[in-house]
Amino acid sequence: ASERQCGGRLNSVWSYRLTQLLYNTKMKHYRTWVFVLLWAAAGTGGYQWDALQLHPQHLAFFFNNNPQVAEECRRSASCPYKMHLDRPACWGYEDDCTTDRAYSHPSCPGDARDFGYIKEKRQQLQVICEPQREFCRGRNIYIDFRPLKHRKEVVHYHMDVLDSGQIGGHCRLNKNLLARQAVQISPLQSWAPELRHFTEQEDTVAAGGRMCDLWVDTPTFIMKIDATVNLYHHFCDFFNLYASQHVNNTDSSAFSRDTQRVCFKEVVLPLLPRMVFGLYYNTPIIWGCENSGLFHAFSHHLIHRLHIPERTVGDGKIHVTFLSRETEFRRVLNEAELIEAVDYSHEMDFHQQLRQDQWTDVFIGMHGAGLTHLLFLPDWAVVLELYNCGDPNCFKDLARLRGIKYLTWQDPAKLTPQDKGRHPTEGAHEKFTNYWFDREEFVRLMQEAAEHVREHRGWRNLQEQLNKSQQREEL
Image: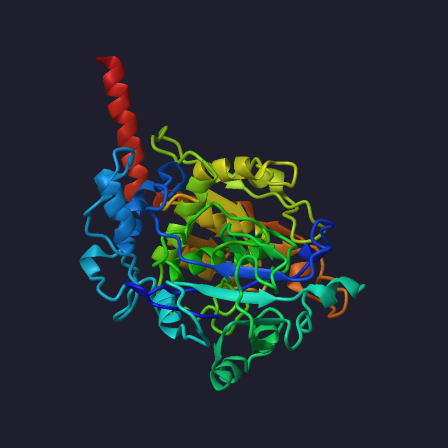
């Protein structure tokens, strides 16, 4: 809502989640909620290095974007990351980032630099409400939830969560700019339904202030949650939250784990997966582009944060995982004939699913949300979408963004649907039936996948590590 420059530029993306949390019994007695962001210097009280928890390959990029933290690490006797200082590294969205220092080099026809999506969003940030008193890198926002406690219905996906006067700040509001930014009115595509009601407040928003019933300093991400029906839709939120951390990366706490579900000292409103030209649903992917560094970094970031061990030594084998569906539709009717299935069900712990991903070279499954696991496969892996069920681009695009090879069934004469499909309202539909697959054609696709894995430098490096280990044992 506001920004003040003090020795550097600080970007922020605003968002908030106003669903379900209002019904927490500990909250219902509060008259007003206040979300405040005040800049906290990284050196105050000493930086907590053990809380950084970034993938080792990402540390140099973090320090180069946060020179104050880098300098504190240099001076601190307890900083374990000194070997990552002074390395020439940049994500790709920084103004002075050159190709030789960039995180990745996507394969694209013509001139394209990865993380361009993030750079574009950072350049679009504007000050809508100028603070009326000095806050060094500070933003503050006031939200009044009192009217919501009287509502009987769940406000998820509603556009009337807030009304005029229920959100604002002690600042000079640029009403014309706000009106121009609030054109897209949609519950999941923008923050316009809420921020269009932003008003100037006469009182200062501060701890102990007259209008503040609750003041929480802990950094917080407040989100509008997408459809929470399966893995694909969950990661629509998680990926855009990660992208938003990059948009806010001039703040040393951008990747902080010190967060809560509701309120924080740092208020970050993440990018929305359903926004126009957003990531996942409306991603404007240039034809022929693949291997996005942003998606690659997200995969490594999540694996590291969940403490999933990465595969470092090969065993000479190509590991195949078959995604077995327990749903009514899109099941492989001759599954047992094709391959022994590994079942990713709700009974399998998600951490165990990700461990399985790390040991998968070829991932096979029907069109469905489970194929989102392709985000966390090794770089050399192949995803085989047995049949796309009339939706050819969904996981094909996700695979090329992640930078792994994608295969799908190529000969429709060699698969047999159980029936025409039984959509509840639209009649015949390819996604609402089950299929038999030709065994010989399946084996041919498997051979193509295995050949790609064997030729990939990453997989061969694992086997070389195995050979070196065996030679040491023989000595």
